[in-house]
Image (tube, rainbow, N blue to C red; front, top):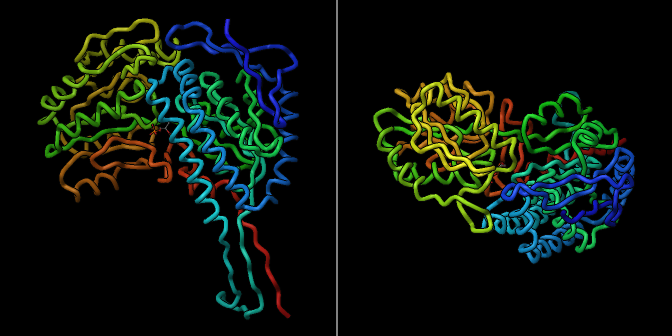
Length: 478
Ligand code: G3P
């Protein structure tokens, strides 16, 4: 029937007063694996008050002490990698090895954040007035970076630990407090991660984690007057959050349709390996997954053949067995993917493999000769299905990439570095990778999307800066 996990507030594990719970369905077994508390709006109000008052004293805690606690949390998190990874396997069907990698990467992210924070927040600026016309040297301006207050962190199901700490650690080092609303699939992994912060000994109320139904507390959280900044990663919901949120800084990462442009001179073995890694790792459930291949017609047959040979070697099955392709997160997600596949079939795409689905498990599928009238040419499957569009010029590829409403990342494969840079400049995406698949990491690199892919820029340094505000004090001399 599943164990019921408590939510975390005021440094304690609590049950919600209504006694209501939310079920977490294991994507592989399609049975309830865990249950979490369904917090009410009243409980959210209490958490907001706690977070507000804890933040005041945390902001006064010396920076080096904040860093010390973060290093401690990072070490504890890494010690707990096995049980947390086990939750990731059960809740989101992430292959066991990748689940461990996610936790270790998260520990590293926290430590790096602590180090980066002491450097960049340990520095301020000093300005003098006589550089601006009409002024004497009578004003000295001191600048420093101060926290924003309470940060609402909403990570997605695909990295419930890593994309939670990529918000929590910058917020904390900068002197903010945290209200975390984990995704339902991934909530227990996130609660385990929060437990590591608890063990590290952070002050009560500084980090809080509320679980519950989006329909009940989603808008209530994002529109709450106690929230001073929202850091969200996920899908379309981010667009409606942006419209409803108040006058607060927003950090949004909302998916992509990352294109892989392949030129005639590309190393096709390298391209094929990157299409497999970029398109099919975690069964395509990454915002930065390769989501459309735009290949020059003259090399398309050769590339498709190489990719097909590698697709045939992908293992398909349960995450516990470390299979390459594991069940996608939910039945509704599987149905959505299937909708895209059937649409492509009806409109005449070439199926390089037979379409096969058992429950939420979808076999990897490459669709060749996809045309712009097919939904899969534009929509994100968030599954192991990858369209190939054959192009007759580089311009056609760039045009397709830029016609998308998304603009997260993209990649280009060619040996001609000048051409690669010109294509990178022409692609309307936050990042372009030359001769490798799109990826967010290393986690200190800037990470941002344009258009419907997001607001602001992430990566450790950018997130710390985004979660602070400049404060100035001006000394006026007689
Ligand atoms: O889907 C989330 C996005 O941030 C991807 O991260 O590390 O898989 O490139 P990564």
